[in-house]
Amino acid sequence: MSKVLGLHHITAIAGSAQENVAFYTAILGLRLVKKTVNFDDPGTYHFYYGDEYGRPGTILTFFPWQHMAKGRNGAGMATEIAYSIPKGSMSFWEKHLQKNGVSLDHKVERFGDIYQPFTDPDGLQLSMVETGLEDNRQGWQVPEIDQGVATKGFFNTTLTLRELEPTARILTDLLDYDQVAQEGNRFRFVNPHVTSANTIDIWVDPKAQRGSNLAGTNHHIAFTVENSEDQMKLREEILSAGLHITPQIDRDYFHSLYFREPGGVLFEIATKQPGFTVDEPLDRLGQALKLPKQFEAHRNEIEAVLPVIKETR
Ligand code: ZN
View 1 (tube, rainbow, N blue to C red):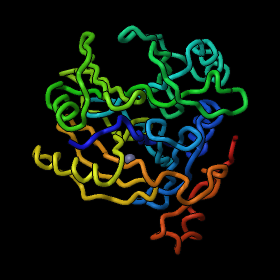
View 2: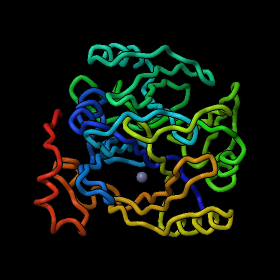
View 3: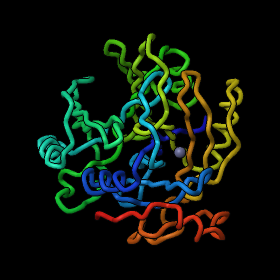
View 4: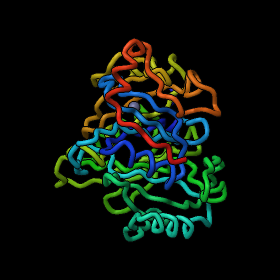
């Protein structure tokens, strides 16, 4: 069987590009590792934030549409993203977020860990969590956020679904996850091949309305595979399970397949390679606007319609 290696990236929808950059770089302390455009809508940015390299399991990406209406979380969506933070750093984050005008929701306990929920400027639901598990990933450092407190990448994401079974079967039978725990209507799945960004929760709410996939909501979640060979094996397995899946699509920084799981969440399978250093050096990641080659001839028109971003780093 092909191996899935936990989460690769999560992609969400934003409103203002400038607010998005300011929030994720200066307040959350992530590295903007790529500034490119939506390959299907090149008049819109595509921002990628992550650790120093933008390693799989740390990458949160956004399509910012300036005048996009606010969406609503609901059934058939990834409805929360939790970042793993170093042990002992929760009080730093509480103060830091509040100092920057981010209001904190009530803490919640899940499977023995305390989650501190908050939202981004568009209402995207995020959490900080200090888990009892080892997480050796090194966060990106910015002024005010050193390595002792920097986020390490994803701990888990939560899918809100009306039914457990159809999606649980996709996770366990095709994507190598094990169902490991349950608390009320929350079911936890862990991928045993990796030690971080390997956790997915399913929150079952049989009466949940379908979400509205606009600003402040997640668009899709992507799982990691080592290479194209594993990816194409997995594609066959997904097809054999009777699901529709796209052909392999070149996203410049990884190769992707997309399929909609039975609960309605858009899943992507992405390769580790080639990564974000394929078209700019590590020390300058995210600084220049990078365009896929099919749009390079239109750079002037594209740059003219994209909002100017003031870097806050
Ligand atoms: Zn994606």
